[in-house]
Image 1 (cartoon, rainbow, N blue to C red):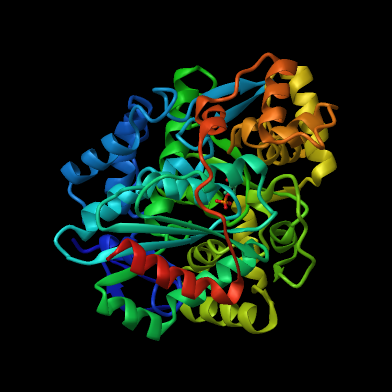
Image 2: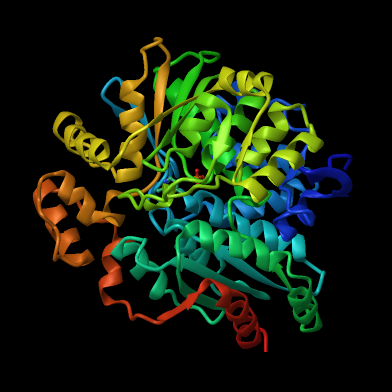
Length: 494
Ligand SMILES: *Cc1c(COP(=O)(O)O)cnc(C)c1O
């Protein structure tokens, strides 16, 4: 295969998609990209006549061409099976005159499952015959951690180590992680926020002496964060599949443009929409919705990305992010592959905490990307009005996007709001939005109360946590994370 991946910061090293998936991050700290993106368009008529899994095979076949069709078919079968609570996998449902793309029907009730049920399959095929053990090290703002633990639990020759920010995830999210079973899992809370955890994970990956000590044990580190190509690629599927669902529902005709509004943190989800557009999906706008950590709203408005601002803890914790790593890939593609520029901007970010893109680059990004923000008050209000008007219960992340969608000027295009988590992952905040004081209630009491008040049912994936045993109670400082990874490797890979 002639398609190769290389870093967003240099073209020196070319790797296959399998190698990129195993490595996660490029050795120079950049993200893996392929210049073939968009060279091959998907056949829209075929997409519109296909199931989710058929589209997944085509999308992955295009983005990861060194996998055989048989390999991908096996991966898709394993990733999108009975662990999903609907055969549609990611159903599109009406929301007033707009549409909701429900991405939370997987085993951990957040959209991360779409990618993290697939990534272990892709990695498994990629490492066949290479003889190494792989330790997945991941920082989570709340949802990735559980989705990675579920996806990688008990996968042979693989361990998974998750760090989450202490006190900054919901009670249910914490319970999902600390009750994870499996002989190959490690979970640790860190004192700090998600960005602290993520930047320390990046440092761990570039720690040569740690790599050498692990390599003596035949262990290599890899990432399950959304910087991994193997996470990004599966997410492209639901943009195409949602379009097909809209055509089949008669909401649009094949070829009509659609606007997607995406609750955004690390920029992985919305970047997958950009990939879909480059691969031929008729997308009018991609609208980035931020919570009070609105660094992306400012960037998309002014061209300056400035992370030097207070970190705000919100009721949409999976979007509490000041460094949106996947934005680097957009900078690469929107600048037509200018690796020098990307390296320069990323050095500015590392050294000064900020960078400014040239005006032409900003203009080209703004052609496709819109933006908006919603603070907690607005998100609460949106949860309440959406329940009252449409009888749909949405989670705080989805509410941020719904608020931003409602504030957009109507341009007549069909609009899809991505719904990224079950409201039952955040029952206390959803209750609060509906006017019930849930302070003092634990996660389960708020779950019960939410069921009672709305007459909806909590997903069994979450209600069953009630009987699960807490297994992981480690808490550490940021500078101890490397040691935690090393001791987890020693325990898991004897
Ligand atoms: C991770 C997450 C997001 C943000 O997605 P990114 O790909 O990081 O932009 C939004 N909502 C929920 C519920 C999430 O778990």
